[in-house]
Length: 343
Length: 280
Image 1 (cartoon, rainbow over the protein chains, first blue to last red):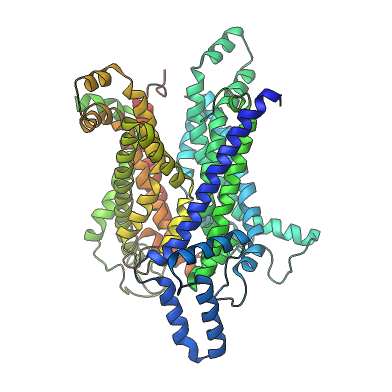
Image 2: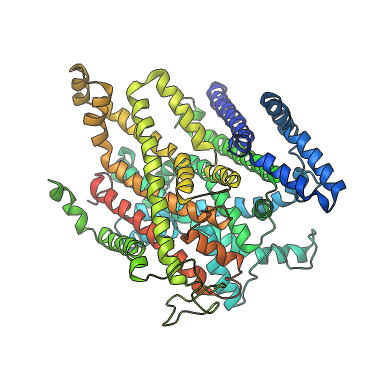
């Protein structure tokens, strides 16, 4: 990178970073306000319930109650609660779980997070690549059979929720045909370890949830890129290139590069939705990730754990957003050379 | 005039097929429960029976009639989708034009707000809010999804209006002393009517899919029947692994047919009305 280009690049990246920091702060604030703002204050209701159930094991219940009172600071004025909450969140202390007392919520989330990342990241990137390539080819050959087929296929596939496709795949390929295992992240009875046998077993269980996400997610990208490519077809450089007698392949690669750019930003914005879908897919597959933990937390109304999961997930989405924006700044020459701020 | 405008649309095969599918499903939801008046929450007969003459879509673990559930569920899902779209649309159609017409600091504040809501993962936030609500009616679910879904539309409306605002006829109206409100309603909003209509359809899809997602993790409507709730019970009762396909296939087919036919309608409209996409 040349010296004169560094400043606009840094300006762009730091602006994005500050924006995300502010949004994250707002998101944490929402997490703080919600349970306290909703009529009937679910937190104090929960505390009362725990207290009433105290007959069975008074000793334990009393200590759960005490921890919760301290962590939520329900006796204190709201601004003190808020400052406490924020400082603890930034220190990485996300409170104590109720259903798995006295475990810290962070200690419950840490082991399941990698499973979600391993499922989500490769599948959305694969879907992005396949979808965009399909869409670009369709747009380039617009009006052809390939185009019509790709478009109609993508229109339907893009509306299939990941989890429902997952259910269909489990039913056909696992229950009926017995080709793939229909649940879990690995065979029951094995202990996760870094051995070839375990990794193969994991991959075997990985295929169906992976396919559910890839297939349903690629449709949306194909539809978008197809339109972007069709828009580019009218551009002066394309006409000029064709007049010069450039090979079709060369023209295609120019068009592809230009139309793919907005889809990089699109990837950042789609992450939240993709994560939501993946969490539900995990539940369908009994996959040992964050979605499964969230489901358990929801069914036991373990509010501290639910809150903790959200702070971590929203934080990860923002971090990924920022990384995508960073990559965008690297590949968009307009930002790299400081001509404009991009979109 | 209207007829002439829409005539090319009816020449599109894609439009015709998708609108027929859509009308068919709407009829299922609206007329179905009347023609097939079985109580969707009652106990109709034997447990987990496959489709038969007596129970066209079979029964579930509690002996509930699945056809009745799917018909009534389609009605609820359509209602939630429509309501979600009305809410998202109303917010977007207020924020977008104000931002574009007022400009300056108003624009800046509104757009920062829009961008913040846009980047907060709205499904996650919907899950979090729904968690704290003990009673969730269909309307509450729609409100939740609608309030979180509007930002992309507001942004698109703003940028489209900005390109309209510099046209001659708008400048003339301004010189003639039109108020901002009159300017918006007479000169600007008609210019984005097709786009707004297409967005409305996409919002309906967002509502239908959002309801299904929330229901599956146990945060759907707390009473009544919806397509998402039918799927949720199928998952809870392990219908997939026990091979009870008549429980989880029909609601999914309706969701996908409904949302993809709506998406196809917008695509067909885009191909007809958008000069840059029209085939040469």
